Length: 342
Image (cartoon, rainbow, N blue to C red; front, side, top):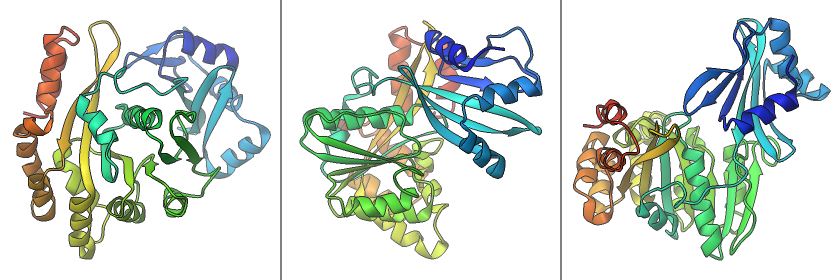
């Protein structure tokens, strides 16, 4: 059976983003967005359990058996790994995310220049949106690095787990992990407001209490960065309101309109060379966008983005066309994504 060390090293060398350990399947690596088998043999339930449990110490195994799921960060050699272990059809399996050694810069990610503008805001809310595994955390870390490299600011992050480790540069970055350094996003965010922050980065807005206090912080002079799972910018109001009781809809709309600075929505797409690039749609919170947030449905935001070029707004179609014209993606890939935005 392949050892933990061999498995992790092989995944790093292959530049995999994820490893899947599942009974009844070969070991799978996610390479360039696709699942690829890397063993000929199908894992038995015993093998899947043994590989998964090799990631845990005795205390962690006990907690896993009590809760039936367990998340952990593993540091081994020069590698950092985010691991989830759970039961699947009564068998133990694992999903392992291979984390980059350092945060990439905005320029390395080839994000639009307006992302730098949003990172340099001194207060308000900037959201990075997209569906699962579209690079939202990577973009937020790049924005933190931009601030940390160029501004003498105090940055507090609240993450679950910490994926990118930041060293202090021009500024100071203090990273807090849920379960290790603070109990929840809500409790960590409340504490952060008493820790003299200039910027608060929230790994994800998952509940109404966290959303409310994040919006209040953004309105009172702190720059708040956060990610949110949503399929497109025009669904943002609907998504946020889904967390709130109906009686609070007006207040939530008001807080969002007052505090929002911009939204970066992205999709990771395969390139012709076998890698991945982020295609971005960017909304800048102009007075027109704020009026829509206060009073109307989110689909009106589409028009704001399409007519907002002078404010450096970018539509997804423009971003895809730029990648297509540069020969970075194929026409088929571009069309499959454009169909959701046209």
